[in-house]
Image (cartoon, rainbow, N blue to C red; front, side):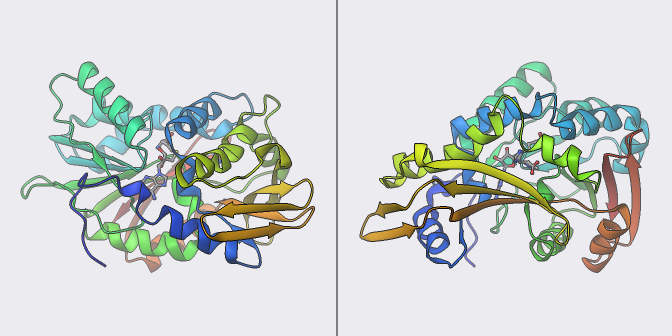
Length: 312
Ligand code: SAH
Ligand code: AVI
């Protein structure tokens, strides 16, 4: 794969059309979740993080606060902090305060949200060198780290759960080439009723987040999805250990995208996201397979979420 210089072109659009056409051509139609995050999608995700049912952000924040001293000792002060899928950077602030990194490199596919977050951080931490990189972490990215200070990769939010275990393995292996230490947020297996509520909130924000993907495809690729003809559908698949999000066609539906036409039968779904939930042992096993030797794990009091400290 060719290496891209960070920020050289509107990367999130390269391959968007091809990925959508490929995904809608499968017998089980699917769309990659990385395309949720246009400006509207990033705003909707920020609202999800504040929903009463979405325990994920609160649990990770609480546990990061509680174990911050130990996490900081693990990472080491003055490191080069590289964060994948940085979003709003809610938890990053805690780490930045505790680690005083020599540079902070937030990487995100959502260029708009990334720029806004980087501006906020630069205001809040005037001493910090912030080097935002608009990039897709599922492809090679040039990361502007310097020799000298150790690099630490931060991957919070359980974004790793949106990758299949095979993709997560590849991502972890790739990260070993970027830094010798990683701090990874992982959502844990739990009562399916808690999971179900978190992905089916009463206010309908998760539904709007899911449906926004079709609105984005219409706007940016000129497709003609009738978004009112689809309903958000999320459920826990216990044998796969994941929440699946789908969009269900309420009636038969034809979508045009350039010269392509896609037919959906009534009740047919487009699979838009997986959110894998791990047991601590499962995730430690995955990290070991990807070449990480040392593993520290911190959890919140209720055992909802874990932060792993991995050493290559
Ligand atoms: N880390 C934040 C945000 C998590 S949401 C938190 O913990 O709250 C997932 C973030 O990853 C979003 O900001 C999204 O834009 C970004 N993202 C998703 N897929 C990506 C990809 N392939 N490459 C880069 N960023 C990605
Ligand atoms: C970013 N990611 C970890 C979220 C999750 O929980 O899988 C995305 C999300 N999808 C629906 N709600 C939140």
